[in-house]
Length: 265
Image (cartoon, rainbow, N blue to C red; front, side, top):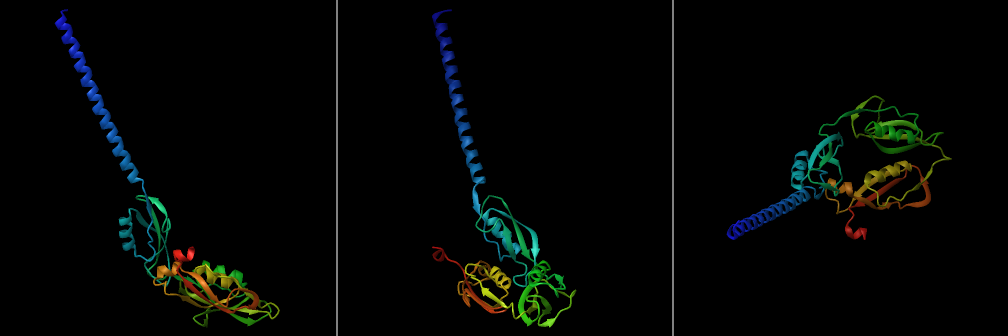
């Protein structure tokens, strides 16, 4: 092989190596860029979003809000309340929760049409037995009307809209049932609990569990909508909580407001 041929062969291999190195470099750059793009897409896809508050919205409004927030909504249950029919009552995950994009939010919606429920026979029940029975039937306890009897807090009569109601009567769900209960002169006192920080529903339950009545529920100017009322908490009550005893059936007024960041500090 002549010297010229050797130089040509050497040049050929040198060019071949350079070309392959360049090709490998280009492929490497493409792979790196592709990986970066994929990771960016994957990261964006799995980014955390904040669940909006769908409470008080119609289903159509919730669907629109969910689309704007990057999540989906689905109705899984319905309840009935006389207020805000056809509106979202609650949902899971709850408002403010962190979720992945596209997460399904499960809605409980307040039915438009009232369902009928049957009034149970509570006569002869103790008050502690009667309250969960009403709740299980989809009814609400109204006033406790005390009447002299040998057994304190024994149910003597049940009333609907001020009149005696017979067991088996069909009424709308969430209807209020007042109970006439016994009061023994030797067992007629209770204490007023501290309700501060509780929402209206829980505050009323605590009062009933303490054998007390709700005189009235007051909302201050921070509570402007039904959704606000769900978040409002008791900041004052009258009479104030005390270790001193009062008669069972005493009326307690509660005052509620929305909690601000300033209140939490």
